[in-house]
Length: 236
Image (cartoon, rainbow, N blue to C red; front, side):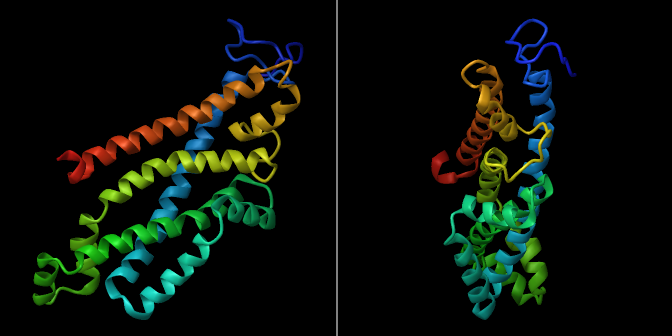
């Protein structure tokens, strides 16, 4: 809701988190921005996970030149800091939420590829896998029915923590002008536009920043909890 006569109003009973320099209610913007942040996190993590699982499964199970090619490509991506790589892609593609998501998918898929490859290397020689091979089960059926279901535990932890990391990266890109377009209710962009008013309207920056902190902290704590539950060594 816009209040042109209530620009930069401090927090009150009418506007819980105050208003910005256009009279927008900051609380409403943060709530609406949470939908966008969750959408970005889910789209990036799910898409990168699918790509990573497929490539990691191929590399880990078949080995040879397939493994060599996939691992060398992932090494190239790992050699470049993720935020720098995302900045380069968004700068080349242009400023928009869609381009931010595409750039972060490029950054995130190698993480899942390496995790699932490591898990498959540990499980492909297990007795139940050898038994499936001896029965003439196809490679793809062995991968998707016998190996992958027993390799997902570390991925669940990584995916949970990455939800927060993706939102933090998207906010960073928006903060430096490479993410959300002006006028979008995105937490990083709200902090960026509020910098000019930080000394006389602290709430403009503080509350979007707290939203990011709580979102990231919440998913990190959830990831730690999942690790404790899923890791048999920690359970012992």
